[in-house]
Amino acid sequence: MNQINIAESAEQLDEDDEIEIEAMRKDSFSFHVMRFEPGDEDSMHAHSVDEIYHVDTGKATLVTEEESIEVEPGDVIHLEPETDHQFIDFEGEFVVTVTYAPGEGSE
Image (cartoon, one colour):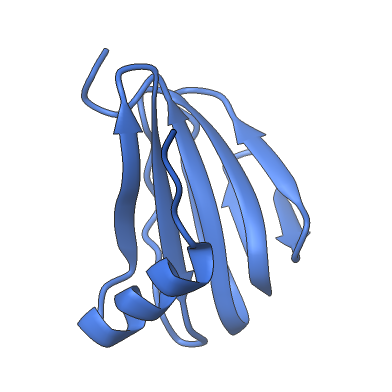
């Protein structure tokens, strides 16, 4: 069994002045914690694997080539592989977890 604490991971990101940390990895998935503040930038990008986001704190807008949606705590979003996307317009401390399946770099 593996366990992490999202709040502690987000706090570590703040202390290290980083945006993302890989908190857990197996062949079948990798689990990341991301933290953004108002004014931060997330460039448009895509991944070669499925992504499942869960918003823990704060608000933002998730932009894809097809649509833009506002996301807030409790929201879960799935992105298909190769979907260009970015988060913008951060409100408060925006903490989101993302599970990549299979784990990034293991396919």
